[in-house]
Length: 161
Picture 1 (cartoon, helix red, strand yellow):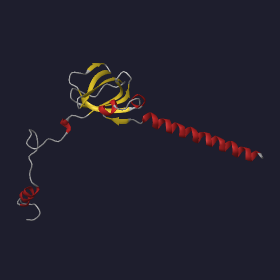
Picture 2 (cartoon, rainbow, N blue to C red):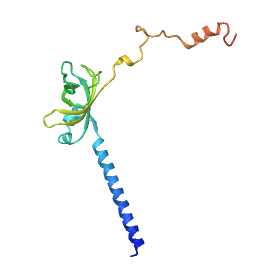
Picture 3 (cartoon, one colour):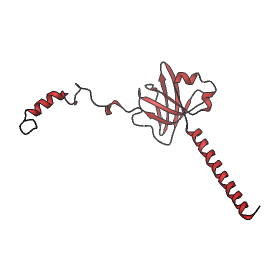
C-alpha cells in the first residue's frame, strides 16, 4: 500500500473513533438524564425496578412534616392516603412556594430503606399568580363587549358619528 493509502486508512480510523466516542457520550448522557414519572402507588408496585431508575414523584406535602436544616430537607409526600418519605440534600434551597399542603414534584432515586432521595424539588406556583375571578376584591368589573362598544359609539369624536 502506498503512503497516500496509509494516510487515508489512518484518517478514516481516527474519524471512526471520534464518531464512536461521540455516540457513546450521547447515549450515556441520555440514559443519565431521563427520568420516569410515577405516582406513589405505582412506585410501591414497581418492585426492584424502582431502585435502579431515576424517578419523578408528585404529591402534596403533608402538613407538619417539613423539617429544614439549610439545604437539607425532609418531608412526606401524600397521594390518595399513601405517603412517601422524601429526603432532599441539594445545593439549592427549596423554593419559597414549598410549604404545607403545596403540590410538589421530587426527582431522584428510591432507596431500599423506603425513602425517596431527591436531587431536585419543584413546587407548584401559588394561586396568587392566577388572574382574579370576577366578584373577588381587586378584580376588574366585567363589561360585555357590545355594551362597551355602544357607550363608545355614543361619545363625540368616535367613529360612527
